[in-house]
Amino acid sequence: MAEDDLINRKLLCGKLGKMKIQSFQAENGQVAIDVYRQTLPQVVLMDIEMPVKTGFEASIGIRAFEKEANLPPCLIWAVTAKSDDVSKVYGIESCGIDKWFTKVRISRHLSIRPFD
Image (cartoon, rainbow, N blue to C red; front, side, top):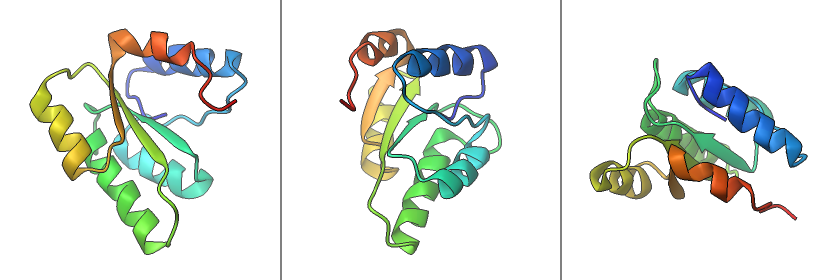
């Protein structure tokens, strides 16, 4: 999970932990790329507005690494306060993001266990 806000990271990791889903944390987009390269998770929860590299840049970096290493693509789910259509379309069409969730709605989606 890539999220620069410590409280949001703790909340999401706590929710995932209760669902018995292992998670790794990254506090900015560059760390997200580094953690991805080390752990190769199936799903990345990606904030968009982060320091060092944005979620857009991190998603592009992850997709480039997957291509370079001949890896199957993971799922990248944006978890962001950005709800405008321009950002969403850019993220999905240009950066390789698979799903777009606004932070106010993610808790509802995480109550369903998608990996059973």
